[in-house]
Image (cartoon, rainbow, N blue to C red):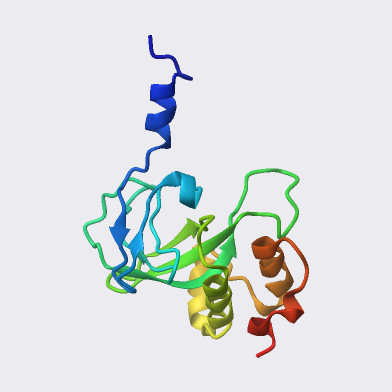
Length: 170
């Protein structure tokens, strides 16, 4: 009898909804294995953090007809329905922009994402123009700002040494 906790069920539930892939941007092989990435629906490259416009309605549905490259344009914090969550306590997320249709989405960082690339995305996002930031804010996406650099560093490395990082000394 298969129960909710049977090995067969656990194996099936740990499977990714989409397989391994080759990144459209940097052309590297990307494993979708949840044991490596820590996420169930791997949708971005851990090396360049680019994604592919696959999901339409919800993460993992893979119903989008677009299929274009989605560029990482910044970082944000996931909103939470938790009543007592303090500012700056949500999960750090990637902001992606589709190169073809312009759709914006936020995606969970994965355990195997390159920290240096995440820091580069954070630095680059500081140059987003006010119009782009305003459009994101209208979609309830607040781009992490330069004042958030200690938070970003702490989330990536578990300590407050943002000023010792070369990425923040530029």
